[in-house]
Structure formats: C-alpha cells, structure tokens
View 1: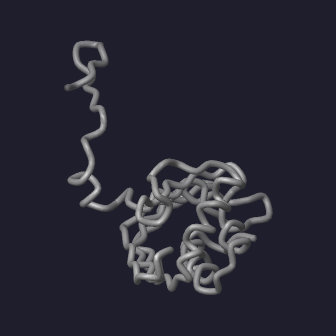
View 2 (view 1 turned 120 degrees about the vertical axis):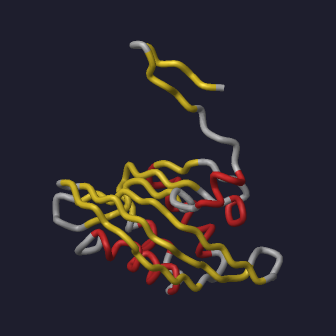
View 3 (view 1 turned 180 degrees about the vertical axis):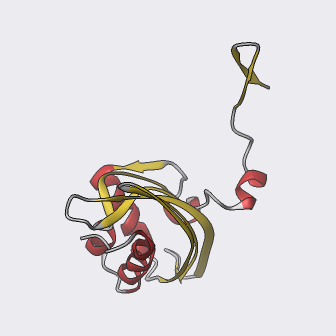
Length: 153
C-alpha cells in the first residue's frame, strides 16, 4: 500500500502513526528500503534495512503512542524516483511514561512501484537537519586533484 504521489507518502505515514497502525506504517516502505533510526526512539541511530528492519523501526515509533505532524517542503521527480525534503514532529510517551518529542528535517527518496503507488526507498530523518552536521563528526571528505582522489583529514 503506497500513496498516489510522492508528496503524500509522508502524510500517509503520519496517518498510520496517528492511528498507531504498524502494518500501515511499514507498508509505506519499499521491501528493500533503508531508514535511519533515531537514538531517542530506538536506542541507536543505525540503519534498518528490509521488511523486518522497517517493521521493527515503525514499531518503535508506534510504541510512543504518537501524534505526528509533517510538512513536505520540496519534491524533485526523476522517472520512478523522487527526492523529498520534509519537516516533521512526533509527540508521544516514552517507555518510562514521560512525554517525548522528536522533530527533524528529513531527506527521503521515494520510489514508484509498478502499480503506480509511491513508497519510501531511503528515509533519513535528519538528512536535511542543520544540527546534524554540528552534533556529529564530519564525514570523510574527498578531493579530486591532479587526477587522483585524496582523502582529507
């Protein structure tokens, strides 16, 4: 079950979260999808892959008994793929019974299925979040100079 357009994928995921429906949330992802987890929700920020990983990730969010709000700021289409930038907020209750709120600026790649529906293919919840670059060590950087690729320190 996907959405009829890439702009609606985030909105339909929010609808599934708000209904606390793990299966509907997981169905918004391609079977080969990847999603970056959130340490505040899942205990780590590792990458979940495939159906079981996605379902487990969605269960973590649904376990918050969440209310999700989302805005899709930008979508760029290229064939059966779309790049989206969204901003979202999830408010819920953590495992200890305390209120929790997570919010980020995400980058997502959506993929069109053969039936014409759109689903998440790559979901990076803080991929467009300025604070991510401040809070994390910089990624390895490379420079192409004089016909060679050089790793920068």
